[in-house]
Amino acid sequence: MAAQSLLSESVIGWSIFTVVLLVILAFCWIYIRKFQSRQDSEVVSTITAICALAIALITSALLPVDIFLVSYMKYPNGTYKQWAANNETRGQIEATVLYGYYTLYSIILFCVFLWIPFVYFYYEEKDDNNVNKCSQVKNALKYTVGFVLVCVALLLIGAFVPLETPPGQNSTQWEKVQYLFEELGSRHGLPALSFSISSLTLIGMLAVITYTAYGMSVMPLNLIKGTRSVAYERLENTEDIDEVEHQIENLKSKCKDGRPLSSKDRRNLQELEGKLQVLQRRGRHLDIAESHCCSKVGSALRPVKIILGVFFILVALLFTISLFISNLDKALHSAGISYGFIIFGTNLTNPLNELLLALQPVFPLDYILITVITVYFVLTSMAGIRNMGIWFFWIRLYKIRPKRTRPQALLFLCMILLLIVLHTSYMIYSLAPQYVMYGSQKYLAQAPSTDPVLGNTTVSTTKICDADAPEDECTVTRTYLFLHKFWFFSTIYYFGNWAFIGTFLIGLVVSCCRGKKSVIEGEVEADDSDLSDDEYVH
Image (tube, rainbow, N blue to C red):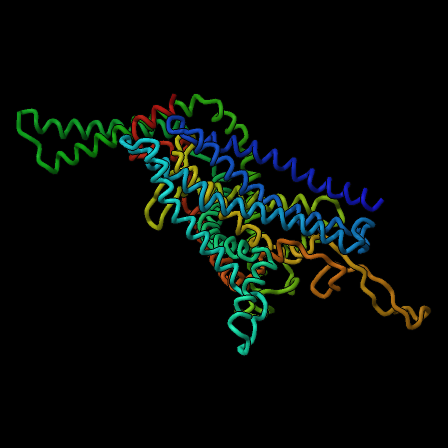
């Protein structure tokens, strides 16, 4: 009976994960096809982008499954279900989740350090028409070797960073070497993978601070403010065209009598002709936007967009307040910087954590909310990358635009999302530490009776799992254990949360000060070619 119950409970958890997996694959295909260039699209880069994006989203979906499985081991009254009463059975379920994490994280390492770099450099070499296929592969492998060496270095550092107390000073050199190999062998290299992933998570933290924080502010406000009127933009664009044509005629009239234009006038004429080309292309796009059915549907759905925008900005403010309280809690009640600001449970009232705990009695509202939070982080990250483009410090490398995004830009986009998803688990833990640590688990605590009739006896009371619970009464999620493998990474993540809050507030002020965006925002820019314009129009 216990084995049948275990099988049915596991099937429920993993069935949900399978459905989410299918939805993720469909979403990735639609998303990549929406943004990829119709002229520059390649089969290999498209498959790579779809797979990398899917891996990022699947990894983020594993967190709700982890919380669901540890929570589902117990009844609401705090007792273990029959199939989970055995420690060995619970250990098998925990190991399954842990191996799921390490499998996905290994795939992420493969993508970040080998697969995506190779495909990227392969298409960079393809831009040179004089290079044959063999040379393309050879040059791409040559550049990819650098990424592989970095990965190997991180794995070696992680493998030989001792987490246990090393042998004393009186030990022989052989004992010390034997200790290192025993450490590596006994742990099967898992800390090596953990260290590598944590190192990538630091880069993901920078991407979260840059793109996710900005996306959380710009996405809701864009929905609330909407876009400018197409008719007004067309009228404004027509007036600009007339003005530029008039300036060009004035400049050309200077050389009607055969006199050459001065160097200053020639530069001005060249700039005006370039500006005229942009305005004319802009006019063509505005004509298409006005006649397109999506514009009319968008106008009809305007009230829905405003409601969604208000909802998203409230969610963003809730996240920011919860993150601030969580960080303040760590600053006041943790062991300090040398222990990674780690705390067990919550000492200050965290609104999001309390909301998740309040939803526990109504299955499955708490799991739906934690899934929505995960999806929200991913969507706001995508919105931030789409609005900002891909930058290297002050240099913009690529733009992300519908139907005109180059293969290299899509690969960069997916790599950034992979790194962001790695940091998302820690962000969600910071938002709701107690819930991410224990889920909806409860336990039976013995307390002295206050009833004089019962005398000096103890009674069992149901409590929510926290750090004070007995070790065998509450199961910690694998996510929590993985996040706190190395204390120094937790310290950096702590300060990264403060930077995230600051970036969000700055992005919110900037987004509020900006006016409505154009209905063809990002479709026409001065550095676009007529070829790319024709590609979009047709």
